[in-house]
Length: 507
Ligand SMILES: Cc1cc2nc3c(=O)[nH]c(=O)nc-3n(C[C@H](O)[C@H](O)[C@H](O)COP(=O)(O)OP(=O)(O)OC[C@H]3O[C@@H](n4cnc5c(N)ncnc54)[C@H](O)[C@@H]3O)c2cc1C
Image 1 (cartoon, protein in one colour):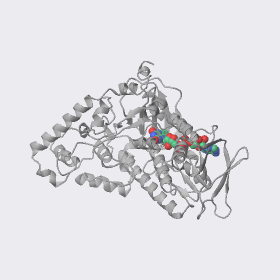
Image 2 (cartoon, protein in one colour):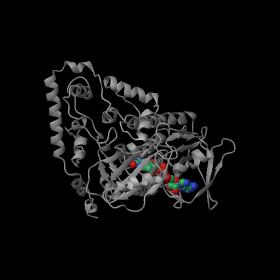
Image 3 (cartoon, helix red, strand yellow):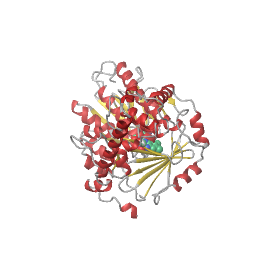
Image 4 (tube, protein in one colour):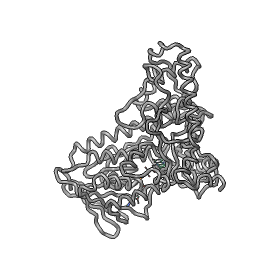
């Protein structure tokens, strides 16, 4: 079974959604040559969740790990570029800010840029923070150019908006070429070892058993192994993130091709807009205690920029995570392990972290408790830090609808309350060694939601007011110049092999 000193020879991955095939492709690439056998079981009759189109820049390093050529990936998955997420109407109606994949400003003294900006803003002499960020200015001008080697511009990164189904299908090809065996069939039973309680085999409808030493549960919200079989408790975070429903529908592009995802606040939730090369993905995430399905569906359909492609699909979810993601000889990756609503496009990234942590801790001579503990510790940090960041978007709102008033009034995790207080008092920001969302992300959302620092690093006061104004103005005009010099996002896509950009506007 691989427990207590026996080597892991056979891995069985249950599920062939994005999580399953990302796991299969990465394990085959990183560990396949060590003689590990990898089998993936999926059921076409059950299908996949079928949403999840916006990613984070970390996916680029995952692609590199798999030897995937970015240009080819973009062509095969109808991908567009994402420089960040634009939030509309999240503070007050009419507000607009971008959480960028890049920094703000540049060093103009010994303190971090945010402190200089905070002082200038306090005296009404700073432009909105977004104007000091190259990816934001480029995104709003619908321009993009990849960062270059030796780039002297402000550092930035990018992610993709793609058809996740096509991405998973491509990874399935790569994984199978690297030796992964794909089995089609519905799992109807799970056999467990009588002594250890570990999973010994999954049983298909045909009666066939697929045995393994280590099982990766990628069965989606069903959580077939980690939940149904091993009963790992689910930690429900609905008290902080109460949205629990979504409708999703693609539509034709109305003519906007900005390289960013958009999240617009609505009466009892929010709506996403994710532009791909040939269509736009849309969805409305909402809380059923404040809106019924009809109301939510109507809001979504009334706010599409082009003709809908089919009927909206309804999805249900509960925000939270399994308290333990590695139980016995089973590791949960993807939706089986937990779900945080897609406000910051974190699910695929969590899958990636789950895979990389599993590879780092992959049990050579058998599974040890220390492997499980460390895996759970690392994944708990990831989940909790994302959770706090998501809650921030909701709690710091100034909207008047009942849902938003309730979100403002809810008790929040202490860890988040402290972060808000630290920023308000003195522009202090969280800085993690592990986990997503570094200081720049917090700056974007804290300021975007109208939480302004009342104090700053005292070293800032040493700078003369004119000098500060001049320094800020120079950064701002340099960024405007550099963004304007970038190619149009559509031209960049065309040059990368996309042939159908722009057709949608006419469709
Ligand atoms: C509303 C919404 C919006 C989202 N937006 C984003 C986004 O923008 N960005 C992002 O990163 N993520 C997003 N996600 C999350 C993303 O969709 C998922 O994280 C991702 O698709 C991974 O899903 P999965 O592979 O874990 O599960 P699934 O796609 O559900 O796959 C489950 C697999 O298990 C198999 N299976 C299940 N039961 C059995 C059985 N009994 N026998 C055999 N096989 C079985 C199924 O056939 C399937 O292959 C979103 C999710 C939701 C709900």
